[in-house]
Length: 481
Image (tube, rainbow, N blue to C red; front, top):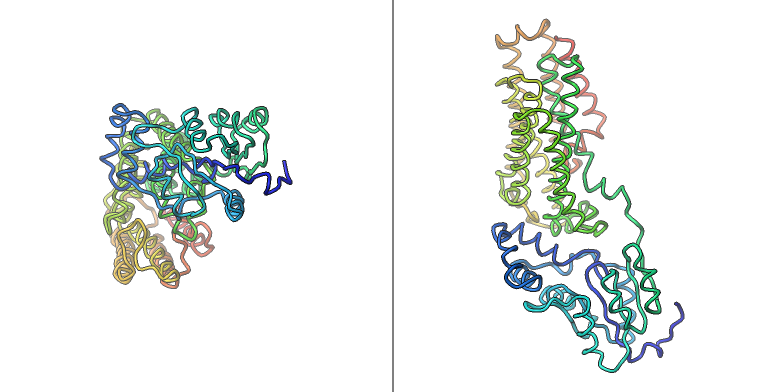
């Protein structure tokens, strides 16, 4: 309905739901992931809090140990603008939510447009009929309007003078129209499948091409059966890594929202419900482990180690300087180990040593590019990381040294007795050294100039120079065999 006069609204309070209505998120999930990131061991107490005092007590205890940044929460901007206009006419606006009162109060204080807050405390979960009772007590004999989004809100819309429906779940708008007069509907563009695929970061699956490296170095790349097994391993690693990327995004919500590019990620931007993220973070690794089980127990063990290590990195260790880049390098190397286990070959000392140093260099590229980006935003510390701007020179030195050491290892390998048994024309491998020297030098030069993407993988995929170098390296190995 349109054209409702200000006089018609005078004296009629508007009660506004919070989760999924005013904000494109859920404060319970927001605070839980903050708790998981900052005090992970306390998360073990969440089931006991739930059993002791129900949902209200659990929300209260989580709120006591994990706060939120009200300024960083993704608000429904068109609806918020509507509320600001209503507030400008001195209309009484009341935030009515099942979220904990402490967290809801921070939202209300930040926005400064509400006359009061109705929210859950340690004893009462203000939802459904209980919320209706609180609204009636507040409104007294006056009629009231109500803005919300979910099916549970039909209980309140049934007694409201008018309803405002915001991003309704399936069937809610039609159901609300049967029980109240709909004043206005606020909807945002549907996210669809692309948002879910974006949350899975499928472009990161290219990292799992490392599984095929042992297939190349063991000279078994013409065996269709082994290629098929490696493809299954690739699928298993990809599903597990996507699950961890989703978990990482859920844990990194505050840091991502402060980042110029990462703030557009689906969960940080509020394009996907956080509850869907929890399901994805659970189901994707389960599917990956099931595929891993079908390959071999040895591969399943390596895949499980990868999953545990990368989860520990996401939850805790990425906040520790140096430890984070060492873990990142180890995760890359684990992929190479996994590829070797699939085709039942032993990873050579040379390939292992090369992997550690080259991947440490790339992990440091990632951190240095983020620090270089900080100079443009006048920040001195990196949100969610253990680095400061003054660390940049030291990290660059470490990364360049590590990259050059990886090439030295290749040179020593080419000059070792092991090479004769593996290659017919080992002298052809010398082309790897200048090619990789050029690539490493170029990567670090662009990092120092601020031209490097904060993910070196994305740079390598998109950069024509990197593509040419990688092609030369692959051809040099194949022709030397």
